[in-house]
Length: 79
Image (cartoon, rainbow, N blue to C red):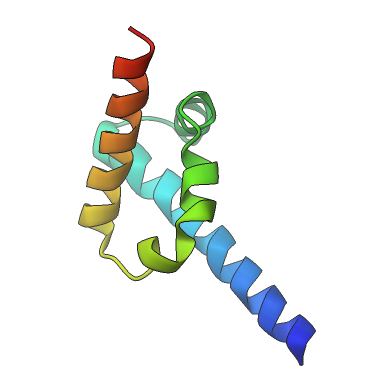
């Protein structure tokens, strides 16, 4: 039973990752590969994983704005 709860959480997390990649690509007219590269460069997936409990309850527009803000902060930090 505990294992099934753990698996369900993991599946929900993967759905959030997949959804975020797809929606971010649509918003910015990027391919999946381009989004994955961008998310890797700016550590978006670890952020989504670490903040999953809050993020998965939010709407997609809010989530896209959150990701944009995270990327912007990383870009500003490297200038």
